[in-house]
Length: 95
Image (cartoon, rainbow, N blue to C red; front, side, top):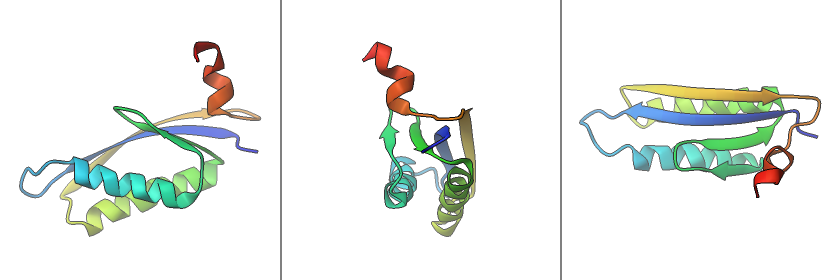
């Protein structure tokens, strides 16, 4: 069972001021490939997993940005850590 929720917002600085969305899409592809439950929101993506695998995702996303020619990247990250962490349970009273 997952014990951590992570919300991440990737903010890449593109080499020539290009639109960042294609780069953000590449970061989301890494999340999708992880097989972990996730929800894409307008300003961030929330992923459900265990701390080590979520930290690995941050590294993979940042490495992908640099491999794509990004000048620099800011990763804004929030964690919710508990004995059991579930996106569904955390927000069920609002759904």
